Amino acid sequence: MSAAVCKETAEHPRLLKLSSALFYAGSSFLITVVNKTVLTSFRFPSFLFLGIGQMITTIIVLYLAKINNTVKFPDFHRGVILKIFPLPLLYVGNHVTGLASTKKLSLPMFTVLRKFTILMTMILEAYLLGKTFSRSIICSVVTIVFGAMVAASSDLAFDVEAYTFILLNDAFTAASGVYTKMKLGDQGLGKYGVLFYNSLIIVFPTLLASAFTGDLHKALSFEDWSNVTFIFCFLLSCFMGFVLMYSIVLCSYYNSALTTTVVGAIKVRAN
Image 1: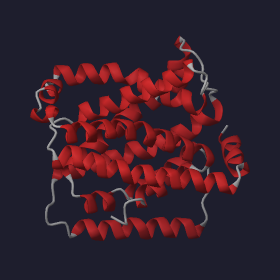
Image 2: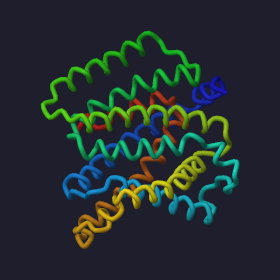
Image 3: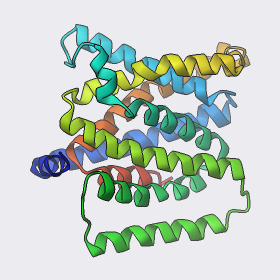
């Protein structure tokens, strides 16, 4: 299966590979800025609730598109859960730790520490997909990670909790990228099926967890729900969550998991 995945990736036109990577880079940059605005500028108390909003938006958009025959993916059946596992767990882990680290870290340090995802992805691709890398690629990855370590060592605002979140986010992102590539290659769910069932399967457990921990109450009691600017930014974040997940799946479909990770890790350097 891994050989077939690699072969299929190599056969895609270069224009589709480049355009999907640029689409992912732009989406990733925009959602980082929007999430930072919601969670930091407005001090919204619940990154988990924001993640739930992004999941619900993904479900609604894709379901409406399906019933209007704009997109196609299989109807739900019990086998879907087995087909897509463990992507939903990796998805929610990536979502929650990503939003948490966005809230707790400065944007420059967040960008720096995301570089560790590249090394993790390369290791997982070699282990799970049997992919080999040239010496030049390995040296480039090691250089990027070393630079990230040097930059992180000079962080005067070191926060153990924040660093834990971002490193967990790196691991979830790497695993999610590689497993997404695997599922797109051999499970028949398609790009939209992977997106839809990822969100559908995990949104209810996440909502329950938010309710039991009191996180949901804090979110609903937030004082700026009457603020039009905040509502606009919140809804924009929810929609951009869907766009980001679609761009990740699209980039993973046309490119390798490592390429997708590299694009995600470097997209905010201009910031």
